[in-house]
Length: 252
Image 1 (cartoon, rainbow, N blue to C red):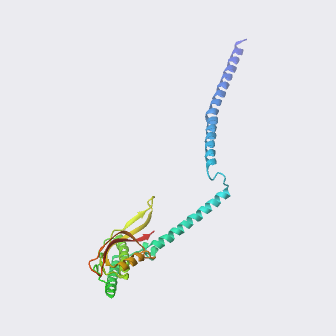
Image 2: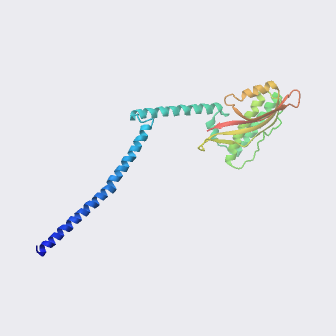
Image 3: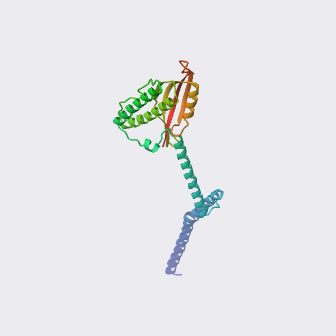
């Protein structure tokens, strides 16, 4: 064997070794980047299939799922309509949509306050029922537009409570004024409705006290009792002195 043959043999051996190393590297890469990820994906798919098999929707087809979705939408619509009916029934205001978006300035508020004071004073005179707090516990001067809006809603609540008590023939309206509004939100922080409490104190007899309690459940005149205290009245005609906080409700 001459030198040329030895060089050829060494070259062939080197090529074989190179080929073997290439095959080994290829096998390693295949296992590392193909086989193992596929096995992991297969395991993940197996877990997902197991979870889907336990789902209550596992046996549903696309059509069935669409039917379920339509049914749920109908239920949501019915619940929304029911909530709208409840809100309308429990609201203390006749037209919530208008009241919610009420836009007034200070002049509008002052004019309305003056008109309501005059009307209630005239009404109390006709009914021969003393209306001691002629100012209704409401101030005339306000700074911001939002304060005017809140005060207008408070004025509406005070007016309703005053009318309610006068119509039920109380003996005397001793005191009436609004308290700060109370906002109510759900668990997610979404606003649901606002209370506009009114503090009232009046003298009344037993029969008219019962009819007054009944009247707060009438539509567009619903009030929620926050608290109530009934004491002995100052005179024989005014057998009871009632102190209460009633809230007008305004829903979104």
